[in-house]
Length: 266
Image (tube, rainbow, N blue to C red; front, top):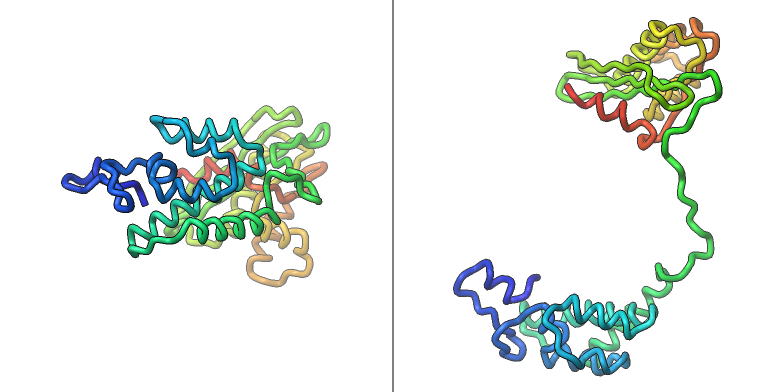
């Protein structure tokens, strides 16, 4: 809910004044600091009294000054108090319900204590280890081929990107076809095109990567698959025999961004 002053700047004939205290203009700074109701909440917050002193033209200036006064834990409580103060203002605007400062203070302290269980300012017991999803070099002598496909409105598009062990792109292709197929079948078509591209480039050691986990699982278990999809898959996978060394692996979408990007242009 924006302040009345903000609404008045958009809607003519709207009263920009504060409904709680009757001030001429209800700016954001007034709503959470200068309004008597807001000052009462800040006064009973048991934080630094200097938070309600001083004159500021912009709300951001007041917040920056507050950050210089408070430590990290106190600042967290301060933000929660502001949030509850703003909720109190909205309750008065929509419901005409004026809550006491002590009631808002107790609610803010309860919320602060509950939130501190999952406080982001403290280090977690088990630290988060970010996963690296960038492109990874293949083994020496191998060429990595990324494939991706997309299906939409009875059409499919695929993209194939070829990179050697140092990461430089040495080939690629993209195409769209009028085929109403599943995403797995479209990805299999992209894999077949990738094999044909590898053959034209005379690549002997190749690693095909796709972000379609379902297709990769089917390929790994193709000996046990008796579905119609398995028939197409066996025909495609037989072409792996024309390479000296070849494998098909799953890769995260973040590592397959270029192939994913070009397959969408159809």
